[in-house]
Length: 381
Image (cartoon, rainbow, N blue to C red; front, side, top):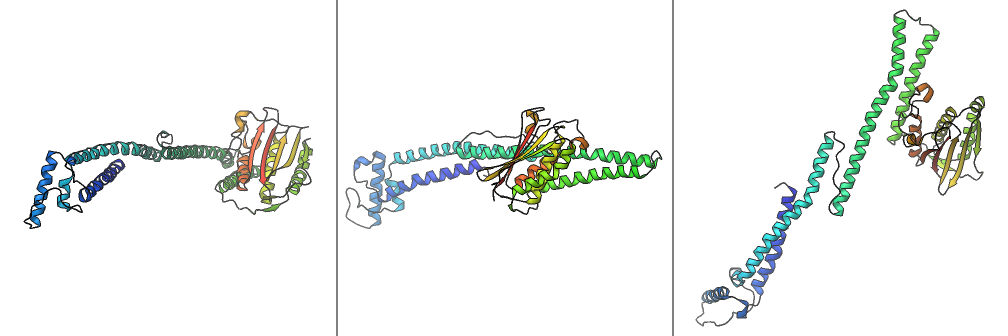
């Protein structure tokens, strides 16, 4: 009785029986059965018996001939005036209706049973479960939402496993260096002089920076990043960014260009976070741009957003890497270490901070040695 299709069947049958019974009862109580053609032989006999019973109950000595007076009949005699064929037809309709209701309710409840089974399997760790998109629009909409949820859970589980593996890998290198050097000092292989202490301190700074990056990224992705949003002169921010990186670019023989109109509108953003975003993008561009290269910081207005592009003439990115460029710990060159290629968290942090300020970011490149362009947008104030 707890099965959905059984409940629907019983409800359908009850409604159908009520819909059939009520009209029959009303006809029996108030209907006109005066004409003999309305009855067959059995119905006529029952009808005459009903008339005789009615006369006896009325204690009258005057026999009545023909049909009784019209008007409401008693429930006791109402059924006696209903033609038997009507009752048989009603009973047959009820049986067929119950059967049809059972089949229909079973077909309706079957997708829900499959979803419940799939949900149970997902709860057990099988995130590859999907349900068929069949049935009425409401069921297919529910199935589509369920499959979308399952896909998101599967993706989240994959990212979680990858994150654990990546964090373990990133922590292993500095911890191994620390452990090895400290063991060497304890064994008397190394002397704990100023150079060795500086080396150990450098490894602790690597660990601290990694932990800080992970903490910042987790807060940004959870939308818990503290933001001081307000009206901000993006023109001033761009000028300051170019000024901050000009000395480093000059030392490496790289030319910095700023392309922005004087009428650039203000944006609605956080000054500190925008500085951090542009600083990270400029640092990446400088790291991957060879001597005598160029980096262009360009800003334009597009409807209700300001578009900012950081374009370099550096190593470029293959198409296969573009979709993963903003993933955690992703490096286009797997041979790069943390010292040469960064932690792989910088662009993931940039993306999280841009989206936290209701902006967008994407990367494009024509391929190896063709340079890279990072495009981001921020809403106009």
